[in-house]
Image (cartoon, rainbow, N blue to C red; front, side, top):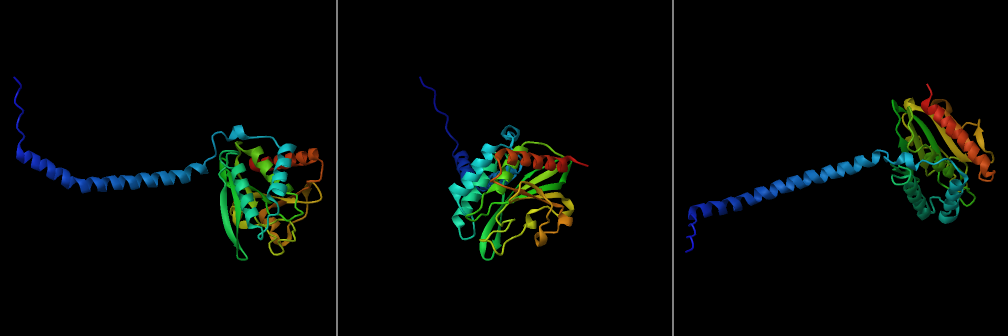
Length: 270
């Protein structure tokens, strides 16, 4: 004989239904608040994570070599082509290529885009930092332009990218900043009004130990000439290096290794 099912107290059922119905708005409110908290935590985390170098950056390091230099130059000059304000699409492709190549998954850097207005046209500079310790607030900066006309060899921007890969994952006392700027640092017919170093991308002058500028030129190696009205060499301690794509590749690699040695000296010196 089956046991009788106990009767449910009607008042209890009523209280349970009222609790569930009354608690529904409160539950939705709590769930909504938690969702917002989780959303903002994830969004902030997404902003913070890329600022740290990749843990695999040291494995991505590569010595300066002629093959990389030739590949970068071919991509800029042949695959992308002239990079001027009138060639907006090419400028955007160059930005994407630099960002991808120097970025988190390839060289391990966080690439920071810095858009600005140039005579009504929006151009983008790109910066990456290798933070040093214990003098993280003291910087050594290396600048090259990715802007180009038809005659450009892309030697300077290719050299900057090769140097960036040479230093990725390394540790130094001071911080190192690479700047790929959209305005040329050397004379170019397509940029009659835009010959300058954009100091907006550099750390404050009191925190800048040395600034090295890579520019296309007829000679390979350090040149004593200042940059005239583009900047104050005494306040920025600028050193200008000209890179000649027509020089023998072994000589270019040797000179870039000399530049890398100078950068290391500035990063770790007293």
